[in-house]
Length: 376
Ligand SMILES: *Cc1c(COP(=O)(O)O)cnc(C)c1O
Image (cartoon, rainbow, N blue to C red; front, top):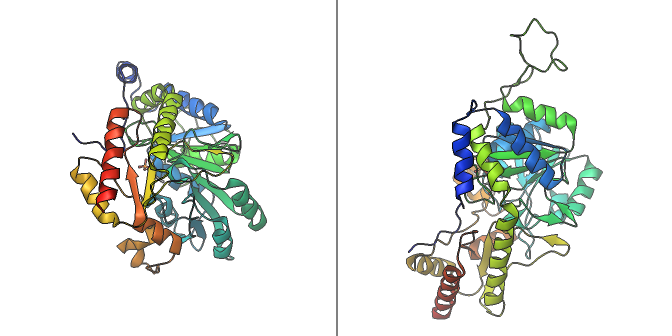
């Protein structure tokens, strides 16, 4: 038996949705793309949504639409998947890392302020593990310094911040539908926004910068005609993927509810264990729990990790601080640039968490964690 840290949940309805598309006229861009976009936009409470090839493309598109370019700086967290910073590099700009908070592992608004320079153009806030960042504070800083706010919500579909769903708050919010995330389309992503101008830029960027929209073309030579107005990419997503996404969206609330129940069971099991630190919740927020991460405070993390892997538990570590990767080290980043991020990285272990994880399997994980901790 091997219990992974995360995995997709695909049922018969999901499979049928994909089969139906395969029998239809459209396998790439067709009606399922806009239906999926509408469904996600309505769910998060955003005016617009653009479905795209993957979560990384979503971040790239958002950075481009924000006008991030050479010479700019963008502040983000080091405790994230590399894509949250790489998207800044794609635009020729420089990611700047602000430290995380000890209790939520999310970017610290105070450190964002310290890292602002005359070159700062945007903030990419990552809702680590599904726990919303302090958006009011971040929004206030953004207003004061005229910055764009992009939320990387790859972990946070279904989470809410002070009564608002993640995806409806900032200039743009990006999602990923990789199989370990809340819903899957195989590969896939989405950007949500309330601003029409950004929406139009995102649409262009997804398809080579090419449009057939007469409202924005400079002229129209006939029905065959289209124009490239910007430099974009082929970042399209297919109807096959979007059909799966629509079907998965019907199950999202159930997925989130199960993740929360599992997280609560872990909390109960570990809250009085002195060698384990469990995640804290910020008031007024509801975590949608992409990850359940504990910190091993006295024992050796590597030993604990190795023993759990040996017991058939697919524990993981999220994340190696982005600036520590050789690529970043070779591009002028300090080896230890964020102190709290370093401490967190040294102690973090992600435990299995996904909708189809059974309570029996979870009890086995809990039992093994407690055993390994007691052994030392
Ligand atoms: C998964 C993830 C991404 C990238 O999404 P893909 O769909 O794999 O490209 C970006 N940021 C974070 C925080 C992620 O977890």
